[in-house]
Image (tube, rainbow, N blue to C red; front, top):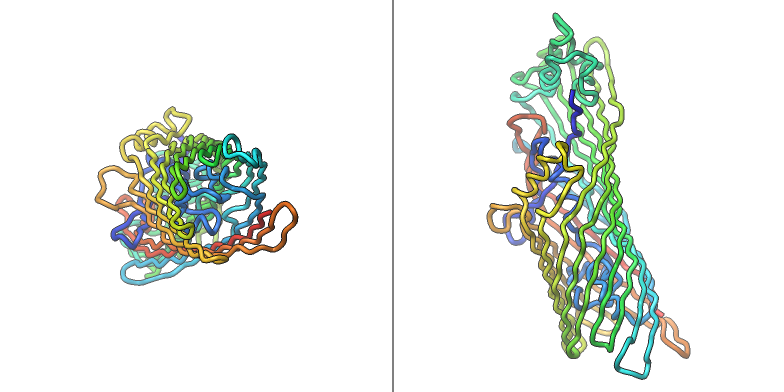
Length: 503
């Protein structure tokens, strides 16, 4: 019997208005599940230092921030001091589920680091305006995505039974070849049993049409981040170039919990079943980012950057558990952990950016980024991913990111605001559908904490607030042929602080 691929719980972005972003959790067939996971692991998240986040990430041409290593590494060449900074972040996710008019809420709080990094500067030609001025090297960690989200709701149903699904999946197979993480669990926990022969089974739970209570809970956590080794050069204070070599780290855990209960005492044997599916994903990847910035005159800069794909090697470990409560007792079965290895290539990206400095007080950044999600690729390319790669080619499209940011300098304080828009990565959808919007504000200060004969030393503190408002829907059960849905409203709030030292 063919090994069943573990179930995937998807999240793709959707929006209906300019101010509200929709996080759409769609049902899927097994032939599409890895295509959606590829999108999830490829879709960028607004992270980094507090200054970078507050300005919407629109610093490709402005430079002078450690987070530029992950965006346009040419900005590293604009830094003129040895720097070290650390960026702790608080992430709070609140999700409200509405099923049949009844609302339920779940939240998740996570502490993490959006960025940690250091830059070493070496200056040349102090008395000349031409030639190499600075040669800088940087090492940093940059968080590039956040998967933390919890969902819960409950209700009644008379159209689907997981117990019946187990029964139907087992029909025609002997017990020794039943799928270990699905119907064999039902056999081992006495939810189904053979009748007449060892290839025919009866359902000892509830059928599709019998009314039953159910609940669904989804617990999601993890992130992606890049460890970046970067170099930047300043040539004549006009041309800046840089490159980053990145090692991407992927960690993701999903736990799906589903319960069915005989709330009307229709069965003389069955009380409840609890089905849990757990998947742990880990991966390592490599990528390269290259960029240039040109400053034709004071107050104006032009930037360009190119990001290679990230070539991931991914391992999935999955297992399932089934607990049944029967009138004759409680039974538990757990499948062996199954490991599945595969490779993912994410899209390449290009960026163009402009930076404006007005009276040395106001900085404005404008940035455009292009990525073609049809370039995602899953390997090995044989039967395992044939349908997924075909779906990627036909369903996904190019995506456009627009970043806007501004910073007002009121020595020693700075005030910032930003906006980040990511367009629909899917084909043939209405305007703004599946788009993502981020809004951010922040501020900070830079103060002298000491000096010697060569240079002054500075303390930098920045703070930013980033909000994403989302809504969408989630199926009551992924195995139902015609699933019912709960409506979701989600608020994702990030408070990011950066403490840095320059000397």
